[in-house]
Image (cartoon, rainbow, N blue to C red; front, side):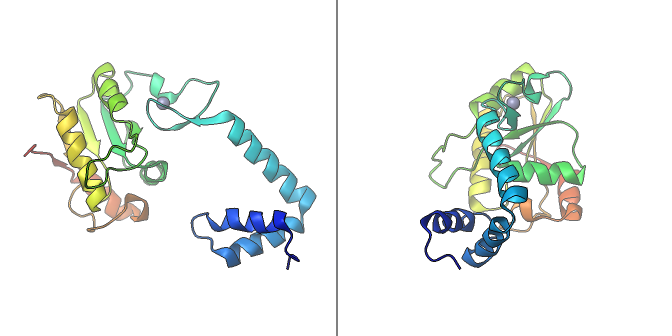
Length: 199
Ligand SMILES: [Zn+2]
């Protein structure tokens, strides 16, 4: 398709890294784009450049924000609950299922079994719990080994005697990633969330 034009090869390589795309579908997308340079490539390049320049990850809550604006996490005193998730994708799934009203805290990954902290936003979670005077922390990490290791680590770290710490109910399939769950499963996992005993 491309007579080995390095620019195109590079683009295929980049697109192939996207979730759900392999080299074949990446090529199809790129063909489509090249066929519509003015209508598709130009606005896409502009949008990407805009996002690159202006959108950053908040170092306090892990959500995305416009770099020059305040983050929603700076509005304190609105809720008394916070839901801790691994990724933005997980937050979006919970948000769109409309099952939780409160703050979100996006860790930015999980711990592996050696508890290696991969720059997860845990210190700022502790600060947010304090400054918002939160009553409940819902740990909504995945039902994978890493997700559960992360949950245990957070429980131990934030435990302060009066804080209610809960986890999503066991309805979660083992190995289940939040992102993959349907609304019904997620709803019952939230509704039947269980207190963490701290053993
Ligand atoms: Zn924030």
